[in-house]
Length: 124
Image (cartoon, rainbow, N blue to C red; front, side, top):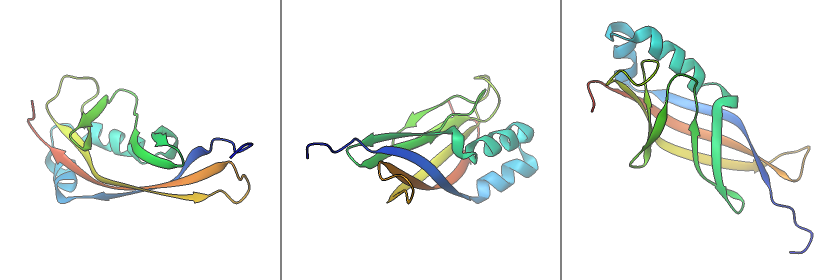
């Protein structure tokens, strides 16, 4: 409609379910300190980027300094060790997004992100 503004999106909540592979890696993994740092960054709302079309979120993923990531199938895959020297990855799977109107700004949609975290060791 004329006069309608394009909506903006703001990540307001991220709920991440850690699967057993994450706990196991934190206890026994060779880069557990790097994984702790990465998990902290993934849990930080300001690190999430959204891709949108019209008034819906089509994808969302975190960007954490020192831990590059990329799309792998329908999942987001990140290097656990800082840089690209490792073969261990954190996978962010089963990503789902909900949007709701922002109560104080009609041109803003709040985004809630839900996902499951898995660790894969010795990947390519």
